Image 1 (cartoon, helix red, strand yellow):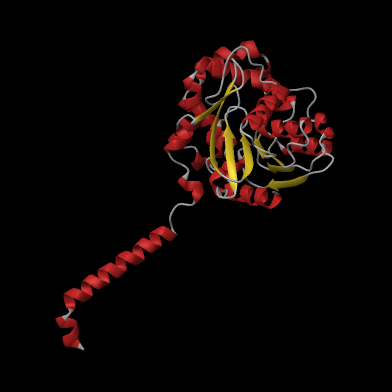
Image 2: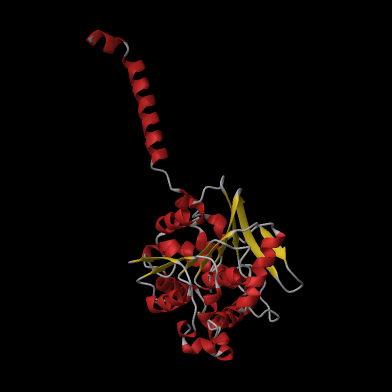
Amino acid sequence: MVNFFVDNGPIILILFAVITLVILYALKKSGSKSPAQKINDSVWLTPPDFNYQRDEHTHIAYRQFGQGKNILFIHGIGANTYCWRLLAPLFDTNKYRLTLVDLPGFGYSSKNQYLTYSLDEQSQNLASLCEELQLTKPVLVGSSMGGTICLNMSRLYPDNFKKVIALAPATGKELIPPGLRKIKNVSFTFNWVLNRTFMAMMLKQVFSKKELVTDQSIDGYLNPYLYNKTESVRAFVKSAQLIMDPRLPYLFQEIKIKPLIIASQKDKSVPTKSIDKLLQQLPQKEFHLHPTAGHHIMEDEPEWVYSLINKYI
């Protein structure tokens, strides 16, 4: 036996090295990044590949991938498609076609003085996009202001949108700081202070997991503003009027579907009392409250949010 190992030592060492490499490779693969982590790369820091031109003043930038049942993702005020980078990849793109939009006024979509960014106008923009892209009866997933738009789309077009998920929907004037309600007085100030330090401070308000505030996430939220800074700031401030629509949240008494509402106990932007007020208006609903996530629940707890959405749809 000893002679066997002595005579065949080099071959055994080579085999051992090969087996070790195979095992290490297998371990690396099994411990590789999850889809949510994989998507966290430079592709989300570039402008979306697609644009839909609704009219001479309005174009909507969007990302799209996958095939199957349609899901439309709608971000909140101040955000863009980057906010879905952790949640969207959890969906099976062999079963779902995912469309992620930059709302007019945000990201790389139109930002100009001719747009109003009102609740009904944004809802109509997205309904027109769905028709153009042939997104038949898509599932709507919206965050904050986007959640409010989702609920309104189901109200306006009840036959077209039967599955709606609203994450921390923003539905009330009390959610907007008094300073932001004076549009002409704050646009110039915002234009001046909007930089990396300011954006990092804002992200710390919407994330409960502070490790999510990185150079990359700052770029993901800030870069679209720098792309057209003055108009971006004006659009942001004007969009606050959507959340302050005096019809909210009472308007949603008219909704005929059963939406999924997801919120967080620790949300600093949309507190639970605002969510409770909305829930009282909905004739029917499914509701889940996370104990520790921040306002951007889909970034703090993407797997938890995905599990609820997957079960609901």
